[in-house]
Image (cartoon, protein in one colour):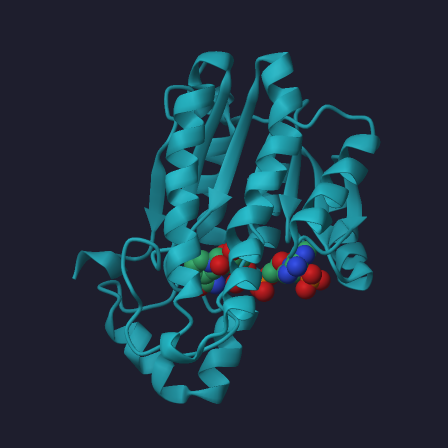
Length: 259
Ligand SMILES: NC(=O)c1ccc[n+]([C@@H]2O[C@H](COP(=O)([O-])OP(=O)(O)OC[C@H]3O[C@@H](n4cnc5c(N)ncnc54)[C@H](OP(=O)(O)O)[C@@H]3O)[C@@H](O)[C@H]2O)c1
C-alpha cells in the first residue's frame, strides 16, 4: 500500500461522539474526507441535522444518533443505537467532554466531581467496551480518545480539577487498553489538544477576558489552534497510516506544553 493510500478510510464506519460541533465536527469532517462513513452522536438534533447535511456533500453516508452520553447509561444507549444501525463500526472517536465549571477543589461537591468523571472518563470507557467488543471479534478497529494537555499538566488560573484528573485517567486508560487489545487487532490512541477557540473556550473568554491573554501567553506559536488542524491527526490515528502505533497520545497544542 502506498503512503497516501494508507490514510484512506473508504469502506470504514466511524462513530464520533460530539460530532455535531467544535473539534468533533472538524475531526468527523476529516474522517469523511478520507472516505469514512459516519455516525455522529450529540444531544441537539437540530445541530446534528445541520452537520449531517454539510458532511453528506462529501459523498459518504452520515447517520445521526441523538443521545446524551454524560452518564454511563446514556453512553451505553447511544452505542446500542449506533450498533442497531447495522454497519460494523471500525473507528470510535470518543470526543465528548469538558471542564464546564471553574470551581475550586476545596469547594467541589462529590456529586459534581463524580458527574464530571462520568462525562470525561467513564462514558468513554463504556463506549470502548460496547464498540470494542465487536471490534475484537472482527480482529480490527481503531479507537481515538480525545484527552487534553490538561491531563499531564494543570492549566494555570482555572479551577475544575475534575477535568485534569479525568483527562489524565483517560490517557492512562488509553495506554492500558492499548496493551490489552494490541494482540487482537484493536489499536487505542489519544489526541491531546491544546487551546482551540471552540464554543466552551469562547464562553470562558467572554466571562473572564483575562483567560484569553493568559492562555495565549502560554502558546509558543502565539495563536490558538484551528479545529481543522486536528483533522489530519484524527485521520492518521484512525487509519492504517498508524498501523504500528498504539497507546500513544498525540499532542496538538502549538507548543503549549513545551514551557
Ligand atoms: N476546545 C479546546 O480547546 C479543547 C482543548 C483540549 C481538549 N478538548 C476536548 O475536546 C473535546 C471537544 O471539545 P469542544 O471544545 O469541541 O466542545 P464543544 O464545542 O462544546 O462540542 C461538543 C460536542 O459534543 C456534543 N456534546 C456535548 N455534551 C454532550 C453529551 N453529554 N452527550 C452527547 N453529546 C454531547 C455537542 O453537541 P450537543 O451540545 O448538541 O450535545 C458537540 O457536538 C472535549 O472532550 C474537550 O474536553 C477541547
